[in-house]
Length: 131
Image (cartoon, rainbow, N blue to C red; front, side, top):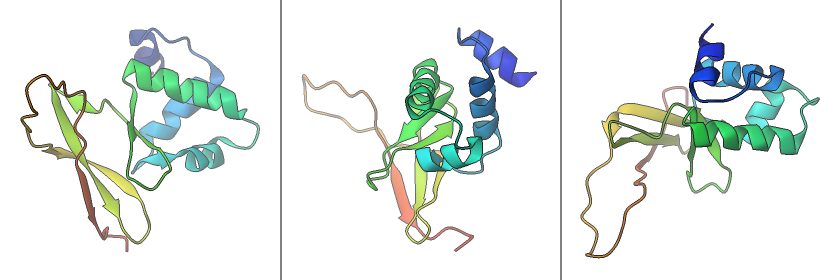
């Protein structure tokens, strides 16, 4: 089972919530907000427990957080970067859905001497094919 293997590889214990959360991300076609995740998992999930597990998944590199400037964090399956390259995100200006654009990498930016870059996030805005 992919979920068991992935959790084990990342040093996370297998729990019912983590398996459901992982399944939620594996089946998502776009990035998910907390309300999206809560709706999928149901009302019986404790808010702080869900946020702790999202944080654990993010720290383990199972998911990544996207700041699309909406004020609502979005989460998507997979690492924010692969082979040292960040990928871009497409934000639909009508439905506000966020999509990972895996083959579109961010540009290299030379920052001033003494500055240290942690991440670069490329946001592409427009209208998605569903809108």
